[in-house]
Structure formats: C-alpha cells, structure tokens
Image (cartoon, rainbow, N blue to C red; front, side, top):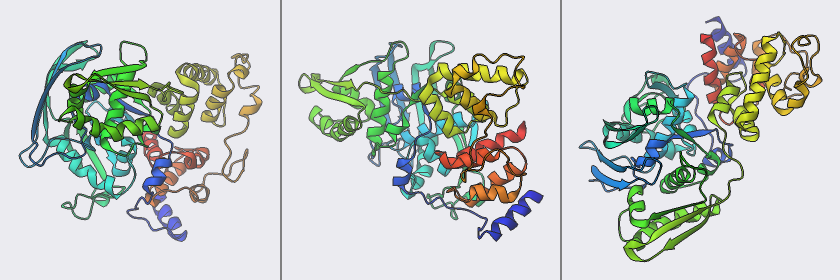
Length: 472
C-alpha cells in the first residue's frame, strides 16, 4: 500500500494522472510491430467451425456440413451450428477472436479451470488484429456469438491423448464477463470497449484440454498481421494447416475440389462466384509470399483449386522454446526473437547448460543475460567445468544488460526515481507504468527488464506476466 501511495505521488509530480489510460496506437503502428508467437488449436481449423465470410445474412442462425477430411484422421466430418434466436452464427472476425482466445489461454499458463483474464488490448494483440476502434468494437459481439452458438460435432473432434474421434455438443466460449468496472465501458449497452477493459473468459473444456495436450500448430503472425480481411486470414490459417499436416512432412502443394473447399470457408454459389470471392484473398497470399501459385484444374463443378506453397524461409518460434526462455526471465519479445533465430534444439542445449551452471553455484549478475550469452556463444561455455564455476566468469558475462542511457556495471539502489527514469521513454498506459514500477520496488523485476520493455512487442502483456512472480 505504501508503494502505491509513493507511486501516486511521484507520478503526479511527473505530470502523470493515474486512472483509466487509453491505448493510442494506430492500426499502422500495430501492423509494424513484430509479432509474438501464435498458436492455433488444430481441431478448430480442421472442422471449420466459424464461417470465414465477413458478413452473413441476418437470418443465418443454422448451418450443417459434412465432408471427407484429407488429413491423417481420414474420417467423414459432420458438423452443425445453431445460434440463439436473436443472433447469427459465428463468422468473419469471430475466427480471429477465437484465435486470440486460444493464445490468451496459453499465455495465462493454460489453467485447469479453463478460465483466464485478458484485457481488450491484449486480446487484439493475441488475435493479430489491428489496434483501433473497429477492432475494439468487435470484441463484445464476437464473444456473444461464440457463447450463444452451439456446435454439434459427430465423431470428428480429435483427442490427441486417446487417439480417438469424439462427439461434442458445446459452445466454444462457455462464459465471459467484464470483471473490473474501472476498466469497463461507461455504458454496458455500448458494445465498444477501451484498451484496458478487463475480461474473464471460460472456454470449452474439450478445447482447453486439447490445447493443454499440445494439439496446436505455430502460426506466423508476421504474415497474419498483414492480411486485411477475415476471409483472407481464415484461408491463410487453413492453408497453413494443410502445409504442415500432423502425420507428414511439410507439403509443397495442396489440392482440393473447389466447391467443397469453398463450403468449408462458408462460401456458397457457382464455381465462377466462388472464384471471384477468392480472387482478392489469393492475391494477398501471393503478394505476401506465402503462396507461389494458385491454379484451377478442370471445368465447372468438377474443377479443383491447387495451391503451390512458397518455400519457407524461417519457421515461426516453437512455443516450448519460448516457454523455456521466459521461464528463466527472458522477456517475451526477446524469447520469441531468439527462439525463432536459433531454434528449439539450440535453446534446449543453452537452457541445459545454463541450469547446470546455476546448480554448480555460478553467480550471475543477470541470469537472463547469461542465458542469452550462452545461446549466442555456446563454444565459450563448453570448457567451463563445475569446479571452476564462480571463480572465473566469462568476460562477456561480466556486464549486465545496458540501460538506454548506456550506464552499465554499478546500478543504483532500487528507487522509484530509477524506475520512472527507465519507464519515462516507453510508450505505455500510465497504469501499466505504475504496476511495473511497483514490481521493481518489490524486487520482482530488474532494472534491465524494465529497460528491455522498449524493445517489447507488447510491453503491457510482459508487465502483466510479471505478476505471476508474486506467487513464487
């Protein structure tokens, strides 16, 4: 409590007003951010539960589809959806919100009760959506459609642990609510929300279990963030699933009958109508370098669409590699960067050597700095034996991470002034700065970690993740 009073006084002295802060990042700024690692639960994509079309008729409250899957399961998929009497079936941006909820659940540590909390700003980041009024306004209606629609899946939901196909009748979102009125809209009738609106969401137990079992696939958010329409984003994620099947190596080509493929996307009509609807999404995926070619083979209702994938230059970060680094206090943004650059095997080896050094008594001024140095310079640490640890430190590990003003080595004692100085140049809502400063005063984060926030993709999310340290 004393820390909070000091923070209030100090921030007031710096011309900062505590209260509900508004995120002012423009959609263009958000699009320029490097993306955090994203993951998609494979059943959601495979079963095409949310229609890809941006708009649907006002009376579309039910659909039913069946098709033969082309993946390793080799079963006939039967899926239906019924919406509440006053709504329509999930569609369009609901796919992105569901994708964001999947990543928010993973980011919360995949809790066993399937319930987690996420701010509106975080959810848009997790969903790879642009930060702006249109996206904020879409959150509440989307969550409502996902909660109020019931999906019936017959012998088609894959259980990775049991290796069986299950039948489910469920809403993907079991419950949601705004839990902190300070962060809620002024009027609950108004469907728009601000950046700090705090949601509590409970997702379907089978969906949550599948995520915990690791039936997920990494998604390249650098591509996803640059796709402007819901249909294009959904098409991209479906094609990523076909490019990286569970039971086979990476595919160079995917081919499907055009009409059934369009039905999975929620596009109905004649082949020429389907081709017109897919024209713009195909162009975007070609322009961004994900696809090398799109070909149509045959004529009329019997024609196929063939996708030729461009060669992958660098796979997205593996979530287990990111988790191994963040567990050892490497910030989220840096963990994604290094996991992408060095790969899972190198990260695992660096983590093993890092843990061995600490277990042998090695004293590091900056644990995260030491781990990154091991990852970057593995040969330097191969000859360090346990009996020498602590008596001779590698030269490159003697320096802590640089602060923004270039100060190194001797850091000042922990003080509110030091925290505010570092946080001053970081673009964040003031309430998040106050929270970060308080964590610093409680010795839960280091000055290096505060300074590194400037390089973070989503510094607000990193600060929220630090709160988990209070339970240690």
